[in-house]
Length: 71
Image 1 (cartoon, rainbow, N blue to C red):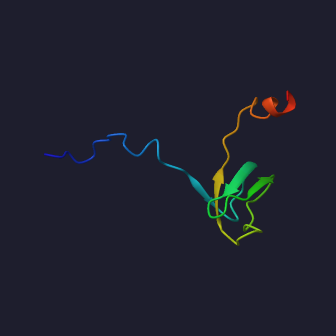
Image 2: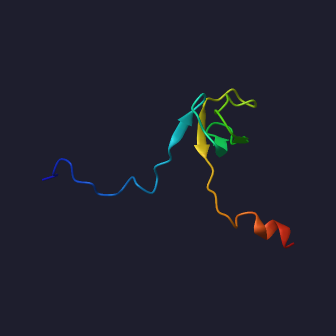
């Protein structure tokens, strides 16, 4: 019998939080529809490429760009 309220963790790895256009935000985001990237300081815009309104926060690491400078 399946118990109600049991967290199996099946969806944790696949979950991507989306942020709507107009939300206060700071950082790097990619359009959930077309992948266009923006860096924002105040609010998420409507995507200038496809008019999408959902944004995914980009993964960030302090060393994420260092490899490009070593080439």
